[in-house]
Image: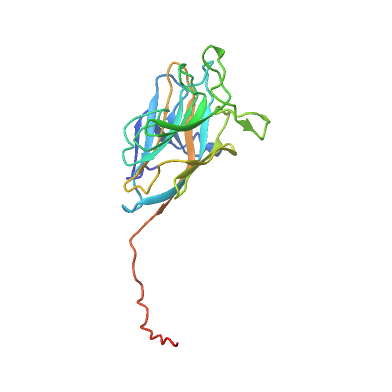
Length: 239
């Protein structure tokens, strides 16, 4: 896999020619090993025009852990200040979609999906998984219609993930065919020079965090051109 000039990978993240769906190439954000953290950033490819909406689709693997509990999760981020090396908590002053698999106790909602604007939480959805001291989930568990059981972030293989921002600032997040957030309102406005970023982390516990078949589609507001001037017309008004 050839790294494009408008992308950057950090720390433990690496692109390999195998490990993806049908053993295709894949972006390995973390391996199933402890103490890893890496990220993959995609810089502005809209020629400097403001991005008014976007869709990011990928096949995402979170799992295959050998530790008793998986950790720590994955994040998807978008904004003008996304960069550096980061994990499941995300980065930047704008959109962060976190998929946190490890409950740190206190006010932590994990295991959960959670949407942040900077560090401000806009909403979360609890999923299946172990919690500190066996405590109850922070909210009702999402149900996976395919199984009739609570949805889990941890999967044995890749699942489809879609993150879609609409021009009115509402957000969809879909995972394994389950609509996790349906037109969740955010403060999003058109962004110039925005960076898309994905990060993951492990600690003492482990999991693979792999991304395959990433497709990001942006809609950008470009300059207005007059391609042909209208002809003069005379209108006679009668009374």
